[in-house]
Image (cartoon, rainbow, N blue to C red):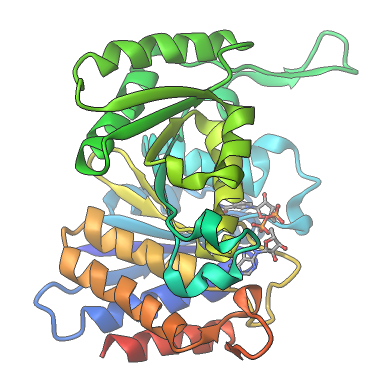
Length: 353
Ligand SMILES: NC(=O)c1ccc[n+]([C@@H]2O[C@H](COP(=O)([O-])OP(=O)(O)OC[C@H]3O[C@@H](n4cnc5c(N)ncnc54)[C@H](O)[C@@H]3O)[C@@H](O)[C@H]2O)c1
Ligand SMILES: CC(C)[C@H](C(=O)O)[C@@H](O)C(=O)O
Ligand SMILES: [Mg+2]
């Protein structure tokens, strides 16, 4: 039986991962393919218990697992630690790098019943259906960093190799081929040498995909265009930090940061997590939106286990619950039926039936 390593992490990670597990168990009940869930520590929770954000036992379990479900890491309690030991660098970035999870897929699709929840006008968001492919194991996050020779200065190096660019851009073209055949590569080639190189490699890869319409866009313009006319995008491929920022922005097209799921892939293994963080401001109150994590569970069934039908069942159940007017607080408008984190998980399970 395939096993899934569940890493709840910190803050609302502890509240949202059980809801995704609950939904995965429910959708696979009576199914010939069942999953075994194992649990591990990551982030601040791991620092507190074993003194390390990515314990060896967690990494070994992740290497052995067929897929990983992660909540979120970080919080004020660990903010004063030196950067490499913090939950973010020492935990999350470390596991992404160790498993070579270079491709982060973040779908941004407007659900019709959430059009009203968006802060943008209906006509701007109603047809949004795009996917961001974020390079996840290179760039600024992983370059050499530190204090300069003048200790009152600091630096972070942004380096991309040909291979790192090629493989994510290649996936961008392959993804576009299965969709509307439009790929927008986002960079800052008017300033950054790494972006000029990114563009050069992208143009080389493009020769193998003549059917795909390739455009290049500077990241500042891309941020503006995502708000102005998001429908123009089909597949966006971009480097690590630009993808981080643009996907938080894009989540609001769907009404909430609590709606954006993600899959981080290396070609054989997948780690699935919501794009949002540990939300210390609402942690422990049973008000966080678990849908991004539940939808990440659907991505797990799709990408790691080939269970497309079951993945769609989860997606349809989420839509049904929202269609019935149920909302977590982040999505709620006056008159909506507001559910807590657990109750939203229960509602999705019920809608599966
Ligand atoms: N993948 C991750 O584990 C991840 C991602 C982003 C941030 N972080 C970490 O999380 C901590 C908090 O960071 P932040 O505040 O900048 O970002 P955040 O995403 O945790 O929260 C930003 C805002 O969105 C809200 N929010 C986030 N998820 C929500 C959900 N599911 N339902 C309802 N509201 C939600 C929060 O309440 C907060 O107001 C930091 O330590 C940061 O490093 C971790
Ligand atoms: C917590 C942080 C390191 C992480 C990132 O920037 O990759 C998060 O913001 C994300 O989007 O997954
Ligand atoms: Mg982020």
